Length: 175
Image 1 (cartoon, rainbow, N blue to C red):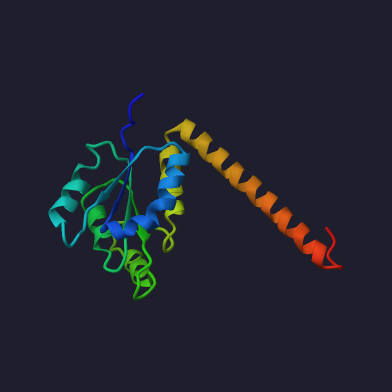
Image 2 (image 1 turned 135 degrees about the vertical axis):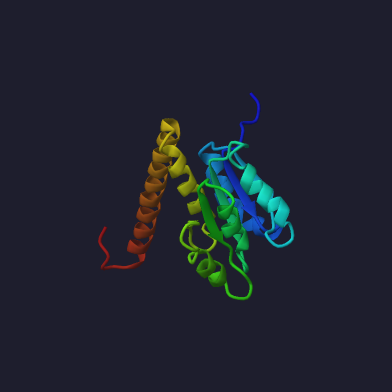
């Protein structure tokens, strides 16, 4: 079996953002969603970025996750050149801890929408992209539901372990 054609594009302005994208890639891997990973700086590679955005649909991409820190022109410019849903992922920066990126993304002008996640929340970006795709992909919807069930079960198990641990050291805590 060959490699499946990517349907989600993950794009960042720099390879230094890749560490922040690992959670997104892991979630997409777990959900078995093929994706591509690219660097298209809005400032250093503006022509490449424009071509990427304009050709995204022709390449089969259905959602784009655009990660950017500092000056986040990448996210808005990608959105300006495509009608494919763009999810903005603000990256934590050294100077302002990602607040600059977040505030810039959430202030997109009317007519060029970008769905914006929390700072460094790559996993949420991937899950939101999966939810968009699940509207027309029943199998993916089922995988998402199983993902949530595993998350719910893990939360219950971990909570129970922590409560029992606390109960051993607290004479008035009843479980």
